[in-house]
Length: 340
Image (cartoon, rainbow, N blue to C red; front, side):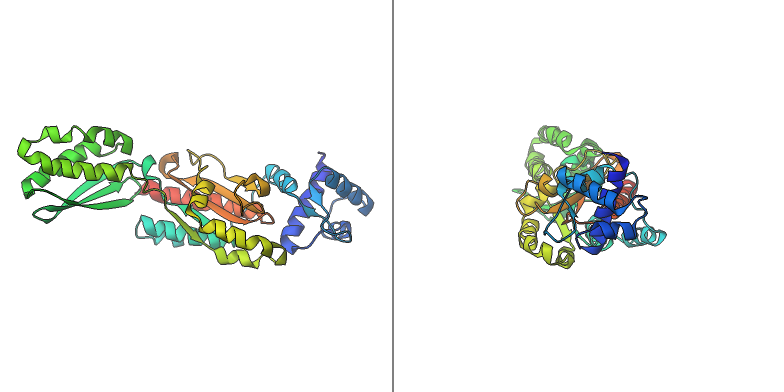
């Protein structure tokens, strides 16, 4: 496609996002300095329509972009809309106030929804991609122990172990030291493979206690406890005009389904250096998402994505601004996790 037609398509997309009204050739001439006559613009619009980039919703109306048109617009974006200094300060101050990992996730999903005025979804850091920072054992009673697993992202998993025998403080201290020597800095799979031989390192009379703790810790390591997501901003979807109303109910239903959300986020990148990805309209195979666009990226410390975040809205969205916001928030959350 030649540059002039791309400029016409860009103008149609930007005006339709801004006005929510089909765009005619006269509006393009009035609003944009395209350097050609209205007759030339009409010819370009006819060519774009024939090629499937725009469509005419009504016989007397202007044109609106199709999924194919949005796709080309996004693919040809040379720059994204830079965040203002006020927006950057807002991101920093809002996220800096977080007190723990759960608070980081809650603040992140609310911030994304506010910045983009769309629905936002954030996946908690995946346990299966995390490493162990520390294992703490707390004696609750003579035969009950609290096992606390802390990951490199600050995520905390807690389990109570009911033991068949009493345990003394000296055994608990020895077990705590050996567990941390075995597990600290390793990924979950590596730790799980080493736990089986841990009871053999202790005297026979102490092995029931060690086995009980090891089994409980193993359950924490292998259980699918990372399938947690946070959602915010679904009310924003109601502001997109009557033409989106028919799509609203199936979209809200899809956002309520945990499996759908995890599938939506399941294509999280393995590295935070991978750019933000955009899936448009029918590129989303999930029922209820066929009229939406999803802007997704991964986040995590040291360029290693531990989870992903996404913004969901109608295909008529501000792609440059949304891409910039998602990327900026993901980078800042990654810095927070990297500094923990």
